Image (cartoon, rainbow, N blue to C red; front, side, top):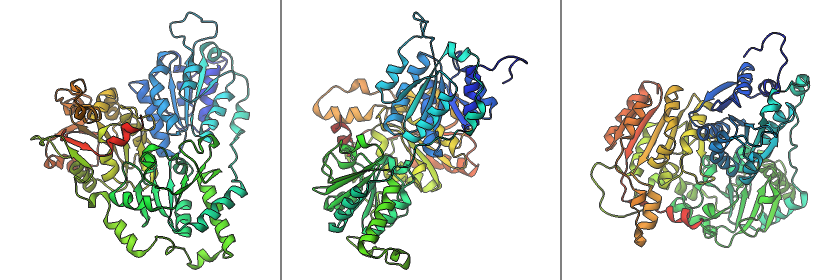
Length: 570
């Protein structure tokens, strides 16, 4: 962007330029008159702008990009309807603790009768995000850093009259500023209490959640587990945190393997790091039996929300794990012995026999229908969703990114499409909103263009996000869009039909999703038999040159066992 020679830089131009100087590399959005200037200034400063077809898609793209890249996501929208269109994606980012900066144009304070006028701050705060009304370009950079430090979305409302005003001369100060929230040092007494509980425990379990992913705590938690003989598990959003660990049981909760469901109720102590331990992770309080619970979180307000705790620690997951290892060593009078090979790997229930059992009882080692019920005879021309996912796991490279939408189908990729690290797992289900997965997958694919990204969607979520199919083709992404197409909102059908409710409003005629994909510019194929996945082999052999849409016609008579947990939580 070029300004007319001799003209004064505006606040909008200064905001974009200073954010680019502060390190913003990618910004997502839909351009309108209220956000065009600030977006162009970001691009002029070196950031890449990715145009979405809908603001909801843009917010999800920024969310997916942030989850995979580890940077704060940035999205820019028009005032009024631009922000309202983005709100569901922003709410998901709040629930999933995704650091997000939203640059939202706003009406001037004096424009009381503008058609665009709404109380943007009140709407933003209603979903748990932070609202900031810009008065100076430095506010935007401070908001970016706040989003990263507090792990949540911050929406900067940019009134049009403020945007057009001359910018103050403070660019140098902004470039040199690097304010960061200091790391929380755990309370020594709280750490001591946890050490006491660990000393008395024979069967501890460590559960890592989304907060552990955000803090990069996987290695520290694995080391703590080795030190105290704990088994390892994750919440659904933290899948992949303990990939490759021999004593990792995978996801805890409704998506837990049969083996995990056997072992976890035997725990006598559960240490939750950055995990809320909500009804999903605990199977409504039944999964961990009577085990004492320790909860660690950077947010003090999150502690004890879902039940009583034997101890709580305010702090970063990785930092608290390292503090506990040091305290355990000091208490035992054997600091430094870990390096000599005394790892604690035979403590508690960590035995070679159990490691071998875990290795041979993954989800794909269980009978295919171990976690399903049937509501009738399987129709012809429909594939088993579990068999479909296992076949995709065999075809795709292990080093991949998997992004999930919400819906009845979501257990299949969680069970059968493992990832090699937690940044490769985008679980867009914090708000349990259908239709967010495709946008998140696009952002994830842009964050890791070297990887194949899988967007796992239901047909309901696919139709809600349909505009962004064009974005996948325009951006030529290495993206496999797998639509688990049962021609219904399957969760509602399977939940309500057994009680005699009329579910016809949640069922639809069979649609040609593959044709829609081709119309949007993507390669696409309909899958009615596993042999149709030869199209995936050809796509991979060609180097994944742009998106491939699979309209997988899945068996609608299969009801997933995890569905009961979804509805139990309201």
